[in-house]
Image (cartoon, rainbow over all chains, first blue to last red; front, side, top):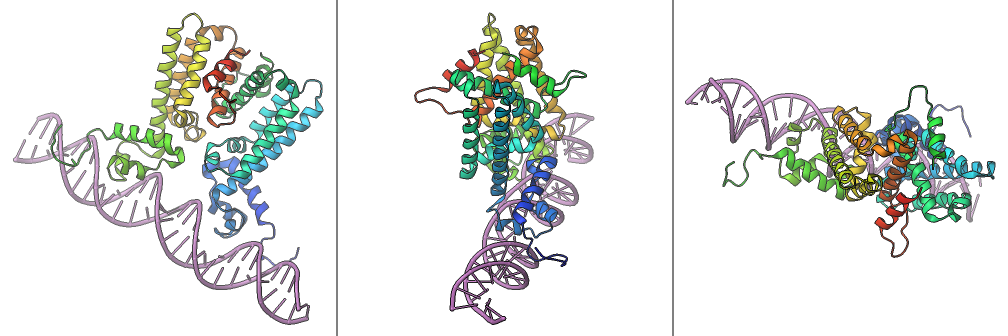
Length: 186
Length: 186
DNA sequence: CTCAAGATGTAAACAGTGCATACATACAAG
DNA sequence: CTTGTATGTATGCACTGTTTACATCTTGAG
């Protein structure tokens, strides 16, 4: 809480500072461009300091992904409560908006890299997110598991294709227009 | 064409040997686990040798992805000709089969990493593949661009979710059963 | 208040990476 | 046979994630 001192030996809130700085770098440079040394330098701390808060680079990525899943869950829950009549279309749009507004983070959340070294924290956060997804979209799930999987696949696939810039927009067409049309299509 | 010699100075077909060895390592270790040194060691050649055939690691990955797109195109064209009556469902199943049979390669083909450094070869190969996809699935495209995008999104999304093991199979259920059901769902 | 213990940061070094440069070898055309 | 070119090697550089030993701050018990 001090101090007039210029550079205190202890940062005070290094873990959070690392996470927020990492998010910025992640979205700007992509996952491969997020190095521990650059990150440490960005926060003004030695290269070894992050290891006091994360066991490895993978640990840091996991922490980022976990916050991503939490934010994702919160947004999905909020939009489903805001549109109790027909939550499905609204949830689809929110799913896509989240992916487009947090491109690198969204990719990280579904990264096979992280899945490979079984990070339990990530597994738990992901399952929690999908549980709320299931709960909150009750209509679809009662309409049948296959229908739910098909809907999820469509939304998720559109997200991935848009993130990878595999879909070309028509002149004057906005992404949200396209999203709305694809979601309404059945 | 010689020789009885044990280890000839020139490999003879290093480029292909590198590509096939790289594919094996890729599917076993993932993209991050594919290092040039390991690759060179696997083929029995010096660490610098691959640079005679690929300008960089990214160049090698690009070459892998290009072969992937070619194989993908060939399979899609073949299956569409084998099922001229209703090519759509068959193509969807082939799309999914390809993804599941070439997991790491499929991911590499759509990797944003490679897209970032605009490799022209990859761009061309990808566009060629999607062109044949469009041509070959004529029915869908005439049915409307949005419908085509929705169908593509569904198939691609299911592929990605399956690759990331985000979808749990029911006891006794096979992947192909699930795929067929989701594809037939509309 | 004191002061030991633990938490948090630093400095330095290690192994491994992609990559570049200079050199060696083999083949192919004249 | 000579010579140019393609292909592979040896070596070194800059950089990375990570570990170890040490420095500094904070905290809580006596």
